[in-house]
Image 1: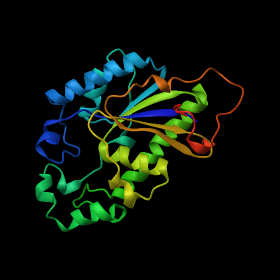
Image 2: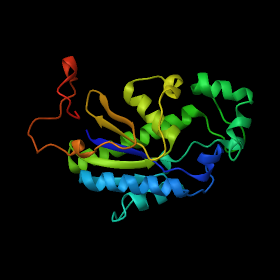
Image 3: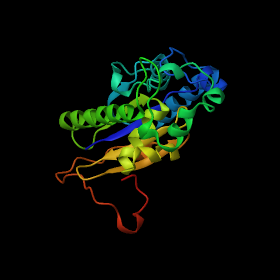
Length: 234
């Protein structure tokens, strides 16, 4: 199908102070803006022919993209990759939340975790909508631009972790083993048979290897390289 670069937003003051921001409209702090600018340098050097750029509607993602892709016109906002709705946990310190009984469920059995409050969401619901959204965009972009198309989505840590877990065939209960730092890039290649996680939590690597290959009459292969392959990105 296509290759997607999953970009987590840059650091915010709530990240730095250990507050669960949730849907609060926080922007990037000074470090976060520098991180997003560094992503801009990486993307400019890679010269990837992005076919679409999709963003969570929250300000920290929109601001990250304004710095990472300053000349891009037409970012598509999609609520499907917005941050998890943490309900009554929103805005509270993580150290305080760690004392809540639900914390252990979030850590060890996230598929059973439901956040309290009228607007609280379950982690299973979050995972399902995020995966459906990314795979939906993948299908639309492949249909319009071909199976070698490259696109980018800017979202949040738990959202990206859920998408990676799906790509790896992992149960959601294992997704806390995945790390996604602010302004990191994770790259997934979707094919008809399986998905390949090509890069995970990358905060400084060269992205030029994700240039699409020349057009080919052969459909993209879903086969994994036996023995590990030659070190290419696919």
